[in-house]
Image (cartoon, rainbow, N blue to C red):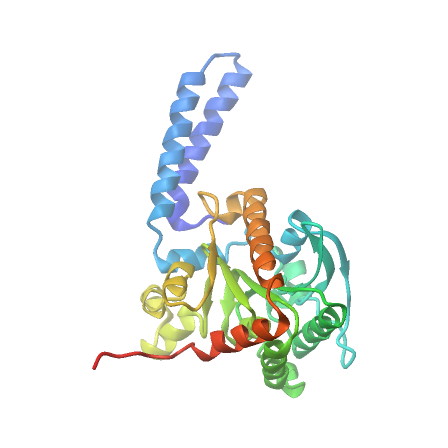
Length: 318
């Protein structure tokens, strides 16, 4: 399992706790008091670490390989997933799966980025960086949702759209731009959830929504901290300072009014407890779906338009 530097104190305590449990079981010794004390110390250490995370540390958590990915949420929070393939132009993109599903008994269309946990899966999923076909497939599924009157749930987790020559030749910028326009016009509720990384236009290509929600340790930004540091300071080593300055993590974006809700993660982060994270995710989706489904279509579209038009508006003192 990937070990983050700031998590080491908690990991050391976990190892000590496991040794105590093993010794107690193997030698038939009652060590319940020692185990309880170690469990309390571990809980306290985890709480202290995760209550004081820096933006850069949250970025590291957002990229953790054991963090639940899109298909994990589909398995834990949704039912009856039926995947659909292809953009009807070029082909299919495995980095952008999508299809019909149910959540809380409600039928929806789900589409999003999928990363891999090992080399083989990352090559298949292109490290979560979608090609033009992925964005065109996503829009095809959203149009199907509109046709059948189903809400759209998009799950964002990408470092950015694929920047290769082939993607440029097949008009990646046009595919994303088209999605931005068409998502603004969809006549059904749209909820976007940033699961981990929310990088640049690759994230925004499925991010125009009535509700934009983020997990507590996700990030959402026009550029990665490393990219920003390379431009401003000419070296990636300044990425922590860039992450601090960019205000790219969920608590900061909520204060700025750029996202609508933050889903709390269990202590230790989503990568430590997939089940609890998926439960909180499902509750948030159903709550926002209930609010949006109550709105007439004209009000839904007007509110969506106003929401995005207000981004970047400044009101200064006289």
